[in-house]
Length: 344
Image 1 (cartoon, rainbow, N blue to C red):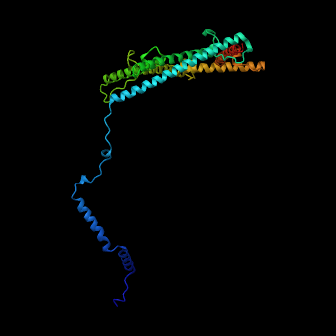
Image 2: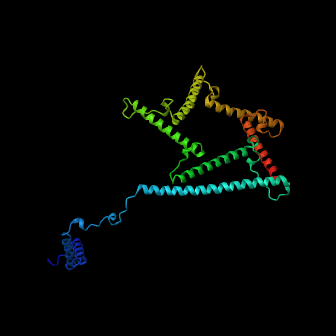
Image 3: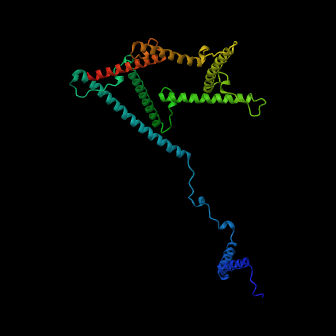
């Protein structure tokens, strides 16, 4: 009866799983060499200090670099700067010679054109600045070109002089601000003065903030415009200008609101009625509207297109068009004179 009794199904499943695990495990003979080798390695490493078998850092294997010499580095920098200055002088000499040859060739061609007339095959090219030696007789393009060319020539000459000073000084740096009369020197000096004025004003503002701290735990914030006039920098001046415009707008809007609410019946008061920046802007827009309405009436009466500058009431658009047309006419006459001079 005992042998005839069957175990439950879950016991059968458990027995099958245990048999599978035992079968899949390696034998004791397999584990014995691994354990023996691991124990031998641990015993051999136990005789050495812990730090003796650690890998050395990478920096210890590298070749130590000699300490850098500041004087040697400064000498290399001076040599490089001196060579660059020499190259700049060579470039300046080449450009100056090229400009002289081009100017001489242009003058020679102009002289041959005046003597031979139209028989010369190659006509010289007249630049806008070459039409006259007097600036009063030049047009807008000639005046702009003559000023630009004169400024560039002054920059080239001053930079060539600075390169000569660098070469003569053995590579010692020479800043453009050392010559305040040069164009780049004036620019650098102006920039440095601006930055220094901002820094001085900010230092003074920090001092004033500490003085006015009082009972405030984090100090008092003072805007740049709160400084005295003699210590106020560019930031304070800009803030004062912005405050003046905003205060003017505020005063005009306050007056407009007071006038609109005065009396028994509230009424709308336009910014144009009280003045101020908004009133000026509205006046310009109103002038444009009035001039355009008048121009539309003239167009419907005459049946022809009327330009803003030709209307009886010009307005802002008509004045702007008239100024633009005057500029274009002066440019056109200048180009015509240049073409005539080239053809002679």
